Image (cartoon, rainbow, N blue to C red; front, side, top):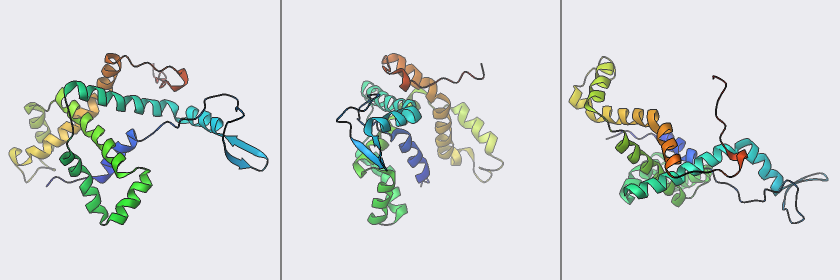
Length: 209
């Protein structure tokens, strides 16, 4: 049975887990601007909190939200879906590892999601991976090269055929990591992504140039 790593799923979900809080973007608090905190005679308003969050994490959150929508659009264009059975294969091992419904509930609360939201976000990850695997399929050459590289340690007691399934999973993950940035950039161009607020544009690293 394929080993399931809860931490990998959790990390992937967190990548897609941010949500933009719908509050006023006004630079100055309007009379109806809700107060979210008080410190003595000083108040912090909803719009002030939003501005601080936007400055700190806005570009990252926007990038994640755009990516999630691109996954949905492209999966729909390609006719790629995720079944309930596929979701169960991902979610049920978490429940089994945690051991009880109460522990699973605590897990969901710690991630600030409901089970429905967890399934939705997991579905996006599975759709993304299906599309990447289709765009960058594992080749026989990659399988043989991976086996040759690790046959003296990781696969020292296995033939190529015995190790094939594990190698395919490993190479799939390698292909996804190697190609996802370029693939996403191509999708952004395909669907003409435009960020209307410059403050939410992800900054490009130009220090090394």
